[in-house]
Length: 109
Image (cartoon, rainbow, N blue to C red; front, side, top):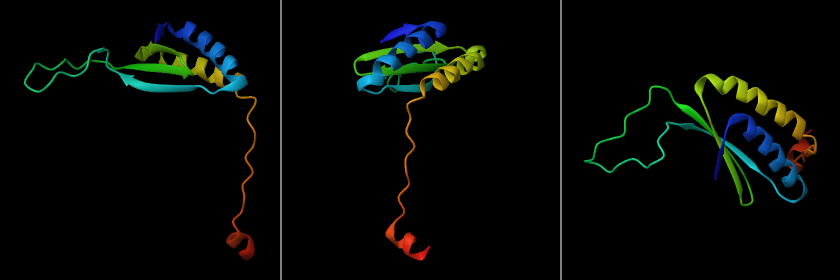
């Protein structure tokens, strides 16, 4: 997994989305991140200290390509506006799903 800074993450995400448009899909996940890159220790061993401020971990995956970035608390609004612009520009190929009424509802109405 490649750890990028915030602006280059959005640029790579656009490339990932354009390559996935043709034949596959991609996923983006958000997760609270405490800064620790190791698992929690077993019982009886000293625990890892809790951070004063949590971070946000953003990950994107398409087939075997994975990218990620860590967003600081003060940069979250800026990052979400960049992500919103990305979503608006790349969500153009969606098709409207037609709702099918069940036979029971169609008979009543």
